[in-house]
Image (cartoon, rainbow over all chains, first blue to last red; front, side):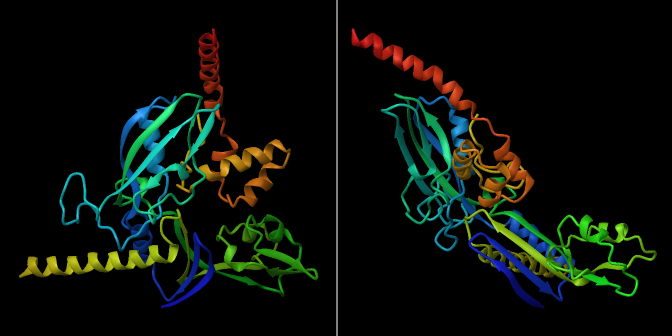
Length: 271
Length: 76
């Protein structure tokens, strides 16, 4: 298998993966979406809420705010040694908020959450959580814990985790009349005209829609769009909770763990 | 009511971009250009911001007025 990084920044990762197959790619994608743990607020104790939003709505908004996650320092509550309903310092982080408005209406942002662990803080401190009119108050205590995307979407570490086949575009130059119909119809602007000749400008953007093949007036078509059977482009967009490369590393670890468990159970079963 | 924290469809965090969008749209900038520069690419996330109406501001006016009246009463 050959992996090449096409694009990488804080939240995005685009990989070209060659000599792989669909079952593996799909397993990694599904694990990244549903099984890789991340931190999110799960329980909220309202001490005082005189704002115009209901307790439940504020709790929901707090839950959806992504938190920076430290996977090595915390356990999943169901795997933690404490086995306590309320959690312990290894599986729970307490965040508090005490906001009021003394002068006119103001917006309360996620940055006003005070965490007991300075590493576990909201990804962005500019998320508007609610608005308070003069004299209104909000005081709460929130408990964040690790969880999995299959239990609630707030624990999903990725917003996009998708793969597609690696495209292969062939221009049959002897048949092509350079009418530029394929260039105009392409929704992803993969093709371009250069010195009155059609050329492939951005191969990786192609989503294999085949519009260019249909638009070609030549019969048979002068453009051929195919894909490589064993090469993929994988796109991972993190919510900010974990770096995207960490998410895919965790996904491989989880797949490994699941396969090992399957093997052990199989051995026990067939004996 | 108030800008949702995440995109309903894909789950991308969009709440933190609303205020910049609202500020720049008031200066007459093109909505599509603002969304591009904020890094909101997919149409699911773009509609979250484009179609949001901050109704909370309308509701809060009632509470502002009530507070003003209470203050006026306390003055005498």
